Image 1: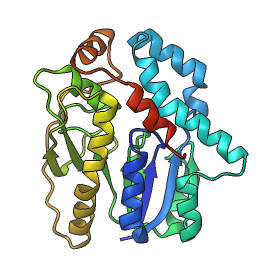
Image 2 (image 1 turned 60 degrees about the vertical axis):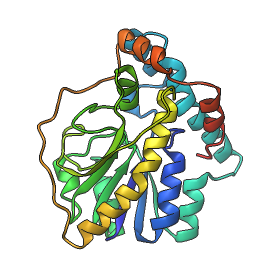
Image 3 (image 1 turned 90 degrees about the vertical axis):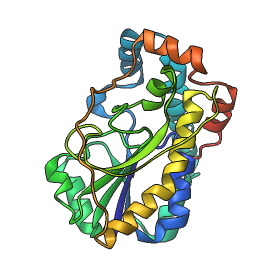
Length: 268
């Protein structure tokens, strides 16, 4: 199958996306990179203000280290003519690299058709695909999500998992649907992590653990042997409240110096 891989470059998933491309890049027909500060979402300051009002100050370092810092460094490198890892991979393979500001725009569906993509794979992607966009490719779409769905549907599942006692970490490959993390489950496994790992470290480890699960699921889909398990979605876990963040901090925290070093190593 020809894969359209959609991702958001961040410290949480960059290494895992790179590993997937190294091992399975021959099947990738298009790479879509989400625009972090899209026009409809507001600029960095407006987004930071919304997070501050909703979640309090604890969340901002997590977002800055894992998203803002890699994005800033990546834009600076591109201005200096130094392409990041995704761009270099796409250039070597002759694969289109599309900046995705609106995944459901007609222009992106046309890019899928031009690439002759068979399936959409979202790997830490922050936009919801419409039914029309999913129907633009023969096999629809699948997503890799770093939680044991239907638990912890939403954008920061490892924070919610880190806040719980006992903690339960895992990774799920599921069908994409026009609803957040609600499609049928194709594959899933629990992952044991260090007891005091930060939510950031947990996310990196879970995305890495998901690479072989995703690869085996795609192989099964290509062979027509990937049974899906329909589930009733549990309540959505949005960006967390201050109380959830306090609980996560008490169990291992959100971000530390090792996470900062990992972010500085991302070549977006």
